[in-house]
Image (tube, rainbow, N blue to C red; front, side, top):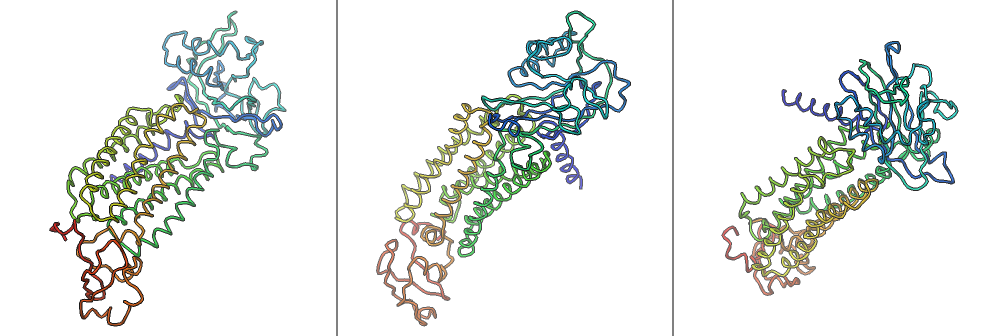
Length: 526
């Protein structure tokens, strides 16, 4: 019971820490006594279409109020700036000197409009807050530009390229009594309630493109992406289940679990983003669960590859080096879990880096390369000792593709450092999902019953009749009543070149027992 409560508290904690940073419909309370600076969100605003400015501008609008406006002696400041001005402003927030506010606004003051101190400013970056309930904010001098029902509105036009913009609130105010209009840190103990929307396009026409309107630019088309992969995985899981029930095997069981987990993870993310498109908040706990399931699925898929590489149930029913295999796989899984948690709690959304540009990310990628080298060595051992042509073909095809699967992620992590942060997330997401889906398809192709019967083994379990029909080991002349009675050992003319001709085969209890392959005769397990 205690563990269940702990897990619930953990999910609640994740929901709280993520909402203020990621959600694009932001609601909350800011207490200036405990936190003099509050970062709200980063939002990618799309490039403005010169032919349709009204429907392609960025809009930031909302309400910021306090329960008792009479306690406000000095207005605080709401700041909305792009990355060029935000980094210096944000970087000086930790200063404890009396001039910390001046340091934060030093660069912004060079361009921001402010009445009456900076009337020559070109950019409308600042608002005085809180605003009195039922009234517009003091700096809103053109009511016709406001979204109805809200106290302030920013309209952003960028005809050159999309750009990140940053929202924050700080307990600083201008000392208008001084000639230099210097910034002063407020010592007031205020509690402000805020309700802010960040959208791309006119809110009045939000239904024209619901999967982009409330999404930051780097997340545009992400719903469509998850929907496509959901459909693709749904297709392959039905195809694979048809094959799985025809030939159940330990390897195919692990692969089935991995595919089902992958589909579940994508379903959770798709549902979260669908909800997000409706309310601008979504269900980030559901997204976190989906991403966690995806990590588990990827690690389980890695285990499948390692088991095949060791030749388990292919050349031997005994898994050699079991402690080494599971130790390496366990360490890789642990590193992925650390990276997952690090990405949730430590990666700074402001810095525009992804999880692969962190120390846990570097270590995980290096260890993945180490596993790839070990993978190659084990494949070489199987090729060296296996004389069965169908197994050799399987190993060659298996090794050729999955060596690419091992190395693609480190290469992608290196190349992605050159991507713009506005495009990086969707590019990496689509490449990883696409590579994983293609990997499942390749392994399904290799493990399809008509092929896998020639190299997967089940110890002493006889091969059922349907498998013989799939591989062509039975022809029309052999399907006689006496053949299935199993009263005698029959000589059957082989029509498959993987089993020597003129071999004796025995039929017992309606099953055909094939002779062991040459490389298997020395193995005690058979």
